[in-house]
Image (cartoon, rainbow, N blue to C red; front, top):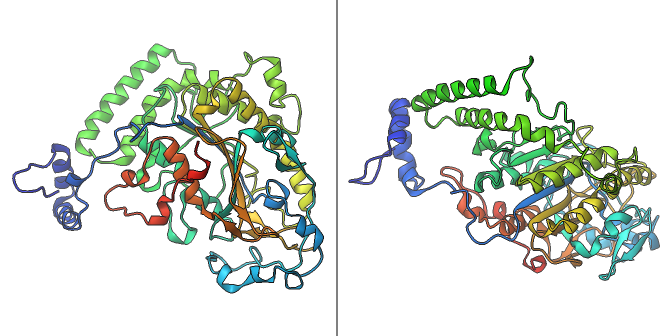
Length: 482
């Protein structure tokens, strides 16, 4: 890379450019001309840019699209006008083409279509807590924790098909290409709290749309998939035959020496850097991870709190108990997927919405309520941000006889802990839950809020040659920050 007059390039940068030959030198000249030279940029230090309010994030993602009007945003007008077309109601203007223009269609198919006949609400609501916020009867355990929640009822996105699963994590539409996820940015920006554990963990079956979370940040910033099984929690976590810890240590040291030698020749190889880091971390995780997913030392009361004694919520309860134990031991970002058994996600209620959401809510409601209660009583909620999200909502109109289609124009996300206000509702959709109309927020506003609470500034996390758009950064939702 060319340097300003009188300044010598760093040794590794010089070796890297020489290794690329004249192509590398030419590229260096062009990057310098375009203002993205290495001399003008420094990577994150691993420390927050300003005092953080939160240390860790537990990201709960419901794959398939949760209905906003049957969960956290009641719309009695749907029942009042149920069976009528939108054009026959006072709300016909919701289908004004100008209001629908935010949609970017990834693939023309039967999904994400306008549904014109209003479908009545399929479940009741009641007020909970001192805040008196209304929550669906499908989520009574979350309702009991409502005074801990900051509910954002005015979300919108642009992908009307399930690429929105990736869009919610990256901020970018599928047609734009692949970009790092929020978890990868957090991993990139902050150093480890506990060197014996990965800082970015995924639990549950991820959507098929995902390839690598780190993308252009490099494989070092991908998540580590975790199974809740003490005997086999990690892929390739144990040797095929019994090996003593001393022998493992000798092998680890040899691998480190060989990788260091290789690193001199290829100092900027992200795959090599990721491999070195993974070997070092894997050695530490062989003992630390199995202990974290072994719940034998948890009390019977804690097992019952998370619903581990109930078949319908045992699996998700174990995942959330593991999430609590992970942040307790210093993991930065834990993402937990629910419903990713197929590409679209099991919350995708194109038909039989009532049966679908009732079953899924039974699986997640008690464990999520338990997580909030457990974190709070242990003094961890103030430093842990819990997020409940889904890629989009569902249409006010019916699909077929008893379903709802994908809906990008207005839906709900809630957060709790991590320095946010408690027991508040921010933003609103219109009277039938069609459009976000008050304090509208694109999905990266959620990202910006989380990064802000962690003490990070996304604009300082940019890397040379990867200019981000303004919408990529989003804006922190100040109204819900304590």
